[in-house]
Image (cartoon, rainbow, N blue to C red):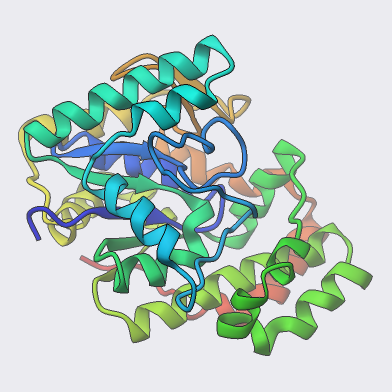
Length: 317
């Protein structure tokens, strides 16, 4: 397990960036932010992942995956491609980011660190990454009211069409939910569509964890409520050392005053980057998460997601 790459994934706003940064505190991984995003940045960095991403929730077809094998082989071995990256740079920030990753990959490789992908966009490719590329996958599941409330705060749309626009994804994983997705697109309002996305994503997670080894599922609320106990256990399952330094970093990062108005933040620690991670009082944060939806909306969300949510009981350690 010592050199096995890691993938932290789940639906967007389920705590992947926060969890990934807590694992980075180990000093044993190189944090790679959303290489499969269709947005540049954080995606579109051909030096980091040398393959074009065309869809939100990009699915890697196991029947046609050669270009992805080649691309991820380099990424997971921390091999940066500077020429490919330089040809695509258009802005100063992109140049700074390229320098950051070139340095992180080089130092990480020399020091024997492991690649760690933090990427909600890789959710539906997690099985392929686990089985074919040999990553150890950590799925994050968040209570639907909290996740959907966070999407409401950001004004995001679920874009269910991107799922049906990928026939191999439908063929392999979504056949039994296709009718629900189509109904959500044509007849559902925003709450219906969000609940559909939550159900689809987490049903997929439940299937993968029962059929594939090397997969762990963690509830965001458990990590936030008991960060020290839960992260110690998560470190163990990832094969990372739970050192006093890691413990102190996580304790500091999960006890800061929460700022509900900052969804994303810039950081220059370890190189310039912009992620959804922010220091926060993690317990206070989850206690406020249901305030972004109206009471009747909370009730609807609970009703529409109940069957899937019951598959994810509290994580015990």
